[in-house]
Length: 74
Image (cartoon, rainbow, N blue to C red; front, top):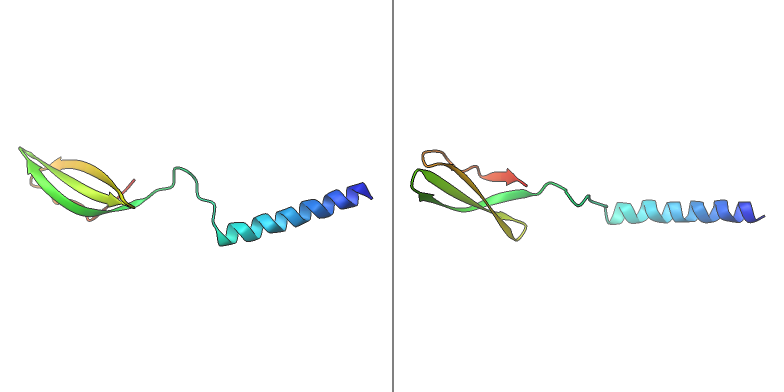
C-alpha cells in the first residue's frame, strides 16, 4: 500500500516537472547569449566594437581596418 502511494506520488511530481519545464524551460547558467552591435570607435590601430547583450554591454577589439561583426555570442 505504501509502495503504491510512493509510486503514484513520484508519477505525480514527474508530470508536474514535465509540464512546468514546458511552460518555463530550464536554461543552464552558462547559456549562450547573442549580442547585437551598438556602436564602435577607433583607438590608434584598434577598433573597439560595443555590443548590447540583453541589457549588458560587451566589447571586442579588432584591427582598425576590420568591420565589426553585427552580432557576437557570449
